[in-house]
Length: 521
Image (cartoon, rainbow, N blue to C red; front, side):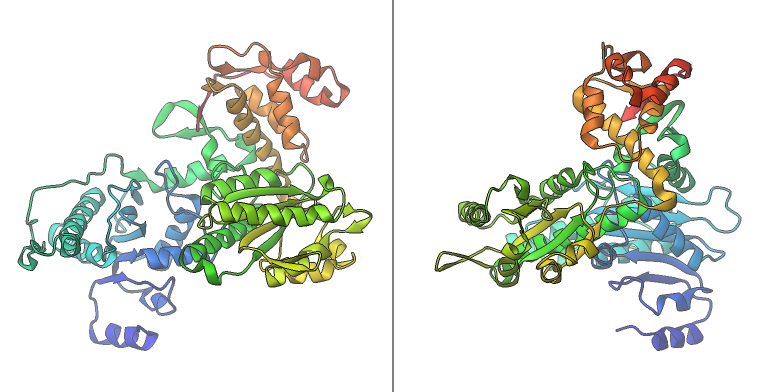
């Protein structure tokens, strides 16, 4: 255990020494004690990196296409500001496997301050779990002390040594008769024990300022999602994936909504993880999504299930005729479970605030959520552990005013999660319409490679609460889409004759389109 007292003693007795730190604790309280001392290296191993996710500070450190996430950059910038010193300072995050996000800050004389190296693909899945972070840390320290490497060299050296160490250590279990402890890779200061480098960093370094600026522009309503990237100096681009950071495939630009979705994602992640190690002891997990109609609640839950490999089982209260139909829903859940008891189930109950036979449906779920059972006739049947997501267009106070509504809310293990937007964030909701519009274009016309800025402006001018299905129907009516491009001439004229589209129609008539915006999925 490390405490502030130990750190203080070390600082007093070993003055002006370089510090190299790897800690499994996420932001331990003693770390700030090093604020005015020469911290050269801070490694965040998988345990600490995952704790940041559990704390809902971010969902991913590295995006699917190998870029640092917006949250990762903001967290790294905070580390730099807390430990800013005259020497170089490097932060390395190890989210898992051989995935690596490294950010290096130069000394006070550096002109280029802030370089990023990302290694996001996993080479092989090791059959035996071995110590990766501690070996990587030792290799990084040795490399920094002996070679004075640039960031790319540092990461390649450390990853290659770690990979060789892991491959040797695995043989202790997979081939014990031929495993020789004398051949364990070791570090020689000044050179490596072998010239074999299996792992190479093909891209980078990236500019920290450029990457952070791209995130800011992508979520700036005034930019309509149009970016200028150093990698594409002569082009304007539109990167759809930047609005899908919380849940892959689900668009969200509103910050308050992003935080709510992060809470939901973490709850689902925890359920899936517990299901894999102690499914027989797992209880029901549940929450309720509150959002206006047409906000994409169903799309969100579907993507959550898909990304986490859960069986998605949807029900809609408005489609049930009487309360016996709810029992049949429970029977369906049991049937799916018996088909594959190893597969976790995500149960989506939409329109939970609707009535069946003139009565609220809340009471039918009290016993299943509390005791994991339901009663049919005089017999009691057991329900498997599931993650339940109820969707409502009513808020918490309205629901608690209904019969059994308060009892129902008290049984939700993860409470009520609101997807609504308020106040100054309304502009971000208009920006969401732009991203949704582009996503619908790609879904309807897969060969499209670019759109015009006029098309993006049209999507931005949709009303804030425009339903997703309305944007989809609008896009599906586009006319004469050819050559992989969409511009204002493709707008559906029949729709625009409607008075409710008068404002959009005026924009189309007066907007002078600039050159195309390339879409990057």
